[in-house]
Structure formats: C-alpha cells, structure tokens
Image (cartoon, rainbow, N blue to C red; front, top):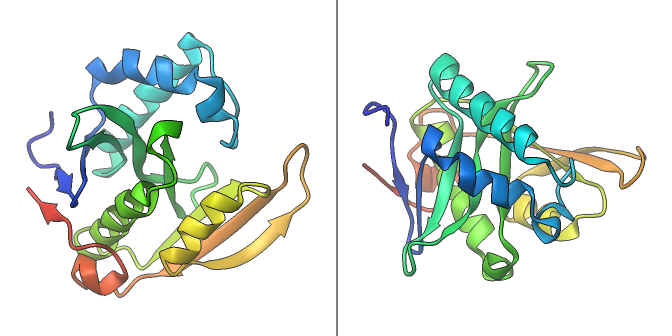
Length: 186
C-alpha cells in the first residue's frame, strides 16, 4: 500500500485505497447483478472488473487519490467502494460509490461519501466535486442531496437516464466543515 495515502475511518466504516490483491473482491462485486442493477454501467465480466481495478490503481498512482475499498468495521466485510476519480473528459472530479445490498438502507453510503468529500475538500483542497448517477436511482440522489450536492442537469439517455450533481467545497476546510463526517485520517 502507498504509505502516503490516507485510510479514512468513520463510526462504522474503514476506507482504504484499492490494492492489486482486491481484484477478486471486485470481480465478485462488479459481477453481482443485484449490486450492479442500480449502477450506471451494469454487470461486468471478470476481465472487465480486473481492468477496472488496474484503472483504479493507475488513477491513485497518477493523481494521488482514487477509489477506496469500504469495509464494515463491525464485521470486517468488504462492503463496497467509494472514492474520487477524474471524469473521462477531465472536466470534473467525480464522487463515486456503491455498496452490496446488505449494506444499503442504513446510511452507510452517505457516511462513506461524507468521509471522501471531507478528504477532498480538506486534504486534497478540491474546490468542486461532481457525481453522476442513473436517472432512476433515487436512493443515490438522496445520498448526494444529503451531502449538500445540487442537481446540475438531467439527461434522458437510454436506458435509465443520467443526472449530474455538484458540490462546491469550502477549500481548505476540515472534513466536518465541508458537510462531511469527521473521519479520522490515519
């Protein structure tokens, strides 16, 4: 693990940077139809999941930030992912997250995302964060709105639509001042 990269901790979660040995966990995660039923890109084959992991690792190396593995502190279970990445068109840094169904509906996505948003504004000094979501994923929209993000646009693209939210952070603020939980950064 890159020793210069922070591990984020919240009341119920631990977030650590993605590592090469996480590939099997992501193959299962991205290959799970229920997990991916609400995600933008749908179920991924194992080779595509491994490509995603390689891309996440490259992003960390290139930009110094990226996706974290989300672990449930109580059980030690892989709960999902949450983090930041540049959009393909390099116009915005995107907040992205996804959890296994058994971890949904308890505020964990919001908790993880608050920690990441706090890190983005407080440590990375990012002034703006965006998030893209399926147009029909109202649960994700609620998470983004709970973070203080504002709907920028809605597009009627097939098959589920797409929305973009954004947040202007308080540059240089501590995580709890950017609307985030006050994660312990290790």
